[in-house]
Length: 361
Image (cartoon, rainbow, N blue to C red; front, side, top):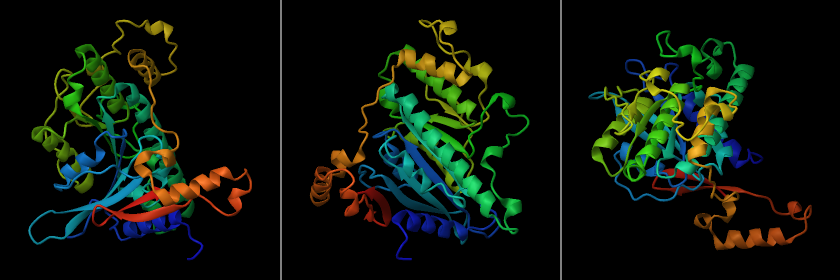
């Protein structure tokens, strides 16, 4: 329709793709499985590099412009239909978290997984990135669930997805003490090679904190570096588990002095232990919850830092002379007047072959 905005068209495209998915998103015998994986995380944290490696694509990486889409296909056997993974990547760190509404829709949540990539070499930005992006995704999941409940017909009522009601197995460690994320969640600690350059005490704080976060949200956790083939092979097994339903491997490592590889359901609060508080009096922190306690302890070691641009339109990587010139004219006009003849627009343009991105102009 001529009156549809780009947001409407993009959302409709995602819904159209997912509407072609079989009722069993895992894909029964002979059925094509379609899953959606949404990748978010630290700005310049290596999300694109990790994704391309997991897809076995030998391509030069470029900065992610706002929100990018691509897909992966994989056959389960000889002469069988290829399963499809719809892959969305959010750029800009926290600054563009509002765009989560594009990949997270009433239809996509039924087969959706989230991958959170955190830059281990930037510990002062780690907690805020994690907190902001998980909250944005959680809020949108709640909205999508409400829309599903409100618009579900008789045909789909029985299979309507209930994010808030994700139930863990009865034998899941600390089951009653957790706050499971509404959809399967994988936390990837990136740039492990640079992480090893930090002091051992600081590495221990980061490792224990991410173990707590991963277990608290019933998520899987793995550290990795794109410079290591072995580490990336472990990461790829976790990715393939979410994207194509494959076995994620049996490798497990809890040792904070080594690479962490912790599948969901493998850890426990007893194994993690208490927050590392050698220089902090826990009683003086006045924490409201265990999660808040870990946050206060973590930020006492790594005070929060935010150097991200609040306005992505001013980010040099998005510069376009003609658009920037029009924007400058808009800013020079008095408030209340410029809105009559120019508005913020969004543009869909190709990137990396058949991929598409949505960028603000």
